[in-house]
Length: 150
Image (cartoon, rainbow, N blue to C red; front, side, top):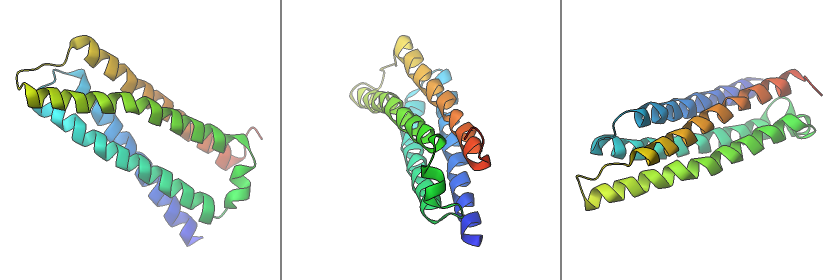
């Protein structure tokens, strides 16, 4: 029981960190992007990736060593909905990540370079889509943990 509680704590902590970094990206991309904020977005995005890996790792640990066991989770749809949503978010996040890398490189070549407004809006839409999809994952988790809609 203590192991299950510890794994749940680690998993929830990783989820909160992931949301924190994603929300930080959403806030930073709203305003005018200075050279420093573009570099900061790139660093935050690396931490966001690390948090996503921590969420995945702790989720797999809960699946393998949690109190309910893998048979409980793998026998019905919410776990697959969570995983598909997680993978979809990961695929969407590639766009902003590549944009941040490209923006930083553009700045390295020309310190006066500015992010085009339409590109900034497009990247922000992707980040907001990630946030909205990520908000579905806890709903699937509640359905799964409570045994609803079985």
